[in-house]
Image 1 (cartoon, rainbow, N blue to C red):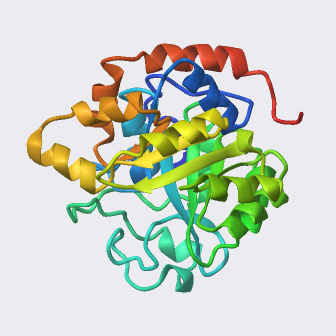
Image 2 (cartoon, rainbow, N blue to C red):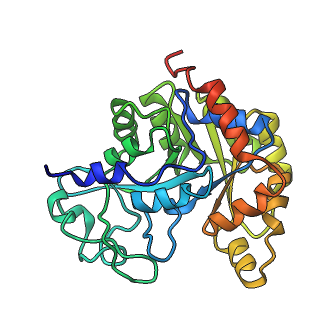
Length: 305
């Protein structure tokens, strides 16, 4: 009997601390916040040597160490299939060439993914549908909606897939955030918020704080006053240690900054050194225990309220 590629993906190693919920991601993250837990987000799924970005096999490798949120990139093929890929072109991350939006799904599946060191792997580009199905009972996905993808249509696809309990939509503008929110009354939305005025604009337009993730940017300098304001307003706080802080850690070996960021109010820390950041933060928290408790308390809440 032939076994489909996706069936094999489903059989990958189980998550060490699965996030399994039937409520929206922001509700789950508020539960973790109440337990003083900062959740690390694997940027582009957490690539490492041998594990390319935006690959389900990479997601399984990331989750084998503990609970993580996974940030992934969404684009469309020439025939409209939602797939996970960061770049507009195939050249850097696959064995193929050319533009993704000029390549159909069947052709894309003939190519293999390449890791960040340029090494070819046995893995293929997954569809968003496959990733959403695989994530069930394992983790929460942040969907970075790339240019050219209609965010309202993408949101409706997530809802039709029955996956709004494990996927949040990333918007780059207030207009896109509102379009995603209007497409479904329960979807969690991540959007840049760097001031009280931006938060007021979103709330005045009808986007409730309890389904917002505030992306506060990527910086070498912590922003504790902003994070405190957002926390007081009941908004999940996300920050990126990408590039600047991660590079400093890689050069110095001093990981204490990750714990300090958690102590200053970051709820989600997006990092390219995801396992290192997790170990540093977990030294003074119990994410595994909090995930188990939040899964037990929120697992049967449901999103149709």
